[in-house]
Image 1: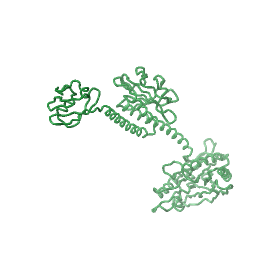
Image 2: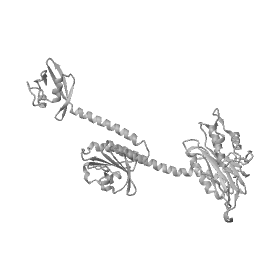
Image 3: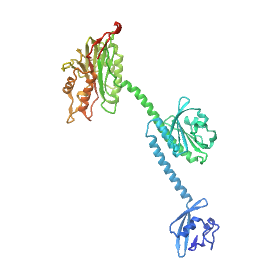
Image 4: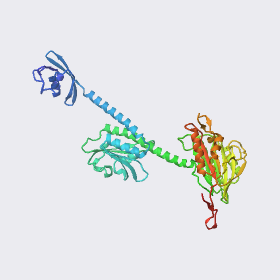
Length: 516
């Protein structure tokens, strides 16, 4: 179409006549062609003008020549639609990426449900309801309205009241929203004060092998219904939300199992038992772990009279989880062998036979210490099995090494062991320790071992101290010596004769107790 400087149409082809039927030769452009094109001509701009004619989008390119301008109109409807579709897809892709990061940012199921509900309400609908499956009739749920905060609740409902929800909770494909009657939605689906519902989408939240829940999207009545592409996009979001919720549920289950198993592997809390003080400290080789290859236990009433207790400290070959698993087996086996604990050699021989059948060929070193309170003193029977002999710190600060030796457990078919008998007077301590203490490397240059000499000096300074104070000081000094360096598992166990008075049993029955 050619228009002169006065705004009069001078020529137009058949396509232009079909587009602007009112335009013709000698007629004014204003009022006969699109307003946006007439305005662009009046401005005299050399830039491309864009606008719509009917339902089609056009780009008008001006070509000035003399006193007139030729306008070439190019139909951009399909191009603009493709460009808008691409922009929408880019926006959706960016949203799904951000949503995945937000959903996977926490392995807490409640937190995942809150994030899913808030993102769905903000970007997919006017309100969202996320439900998790349950074994009963009460469903964990989180609802959120656009612009609001998620609200956690528990719904005692029949999910089949909302068509498609029962199936979605079982992982079946979603029901198209056009099949759902918004007016029939039960009241528990709607947030308080939401108003009339115009459209509903119910879609499953697929998990890892089992359904993770269901997502319900709501739009108010004054908005357009969900389109097919919007429902498809909702399912893409639901897949990511379901994967995050499923991962959180698996993590919670594994954490629960781990805590249950860990309680059996962690060292016990020790206290006074039968008039004898016990205290222990344990530090695994890796600071991020809680268990390892060193362990200790104290078992009460191992004799028929019930007057003797058994303390055990051991060091399993290796470190980390593998060593901890074997530690658990050894502790369980020792607990089963307690009826034989009066005879240390027999107990160690039975344990040796048990470990000899173990295919992983690991071994363990042990110290057994049976303790019995006799008046103000404590009588000990100590047997070492391939383990460093314990140290005795006397009330005057002298340090003695227990004269006991023995074979490693789990290596040879037959073992040898010798048992030493020691008497602890009030304030005296027998310290059992693993080689992680004496072999701890550190110091000023970082390459010197803590060594037996430093350990004996540290123990000598603990004369007349309670058992808990003794192990605390030894562990502290060894840790300070290591600094930030690497180290092996470290465990210490103190057996102390309390400095106190014996109190007779009430009524003249039993062994009585001892004051601290």
